[in-house]
Length: 91
Image: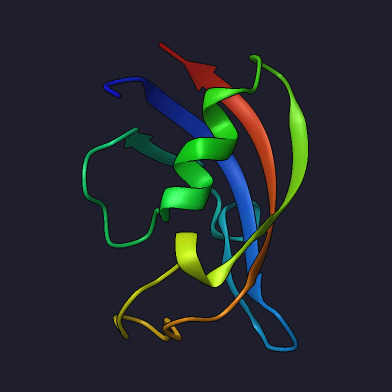
């Protein structure tokens, strides 16, 4: 908890659309692990904690570690999320 992360993230709901692509948006996602963030799931927090700077990972986030409630823009509660992560910063 408290680790600052910058990563390019591409996330899509299982069987659904891509809802986050930071490369396409032109800027990485930056967040602090363990601090509530409307975009970052518990599964994403857990995945980056075991990564190294420059590491790349494909992660399947189960519903229990994904979005618990609907939210902006199109978060679907209790759905598996497939995520690719390219770790740019860990402090």
